[in-house]
Length: 79
Image 1 (cartoon, rainbow, N blue to C red):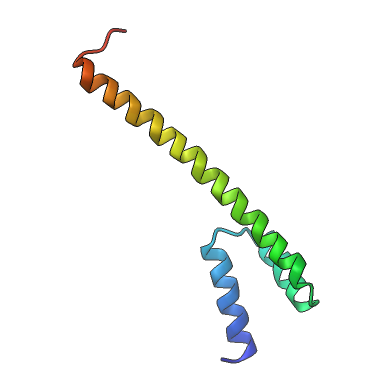
Image 2: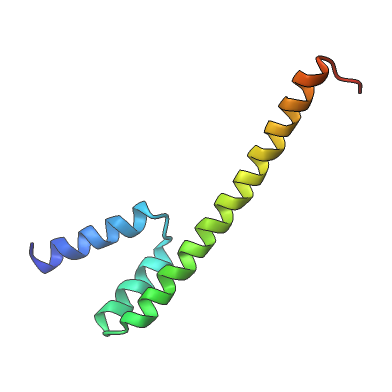
């Protein structure tokens, strides 16, 4: 694989991982300048943000599941 194809694959992977253009630009610049630790830190921060979003969505799902459970148990709703 030549360098250009490798960079294209890297960029595609970052896009698939939900990185925005600024993160991709900064990360690829980190790599070009040999700042591997800085690039890895940037990816770790993005991963944390994704995981936080996942936890928020899981909490929303849990709330809906509880509501459905409660409604099925009562078989009616009083508003």
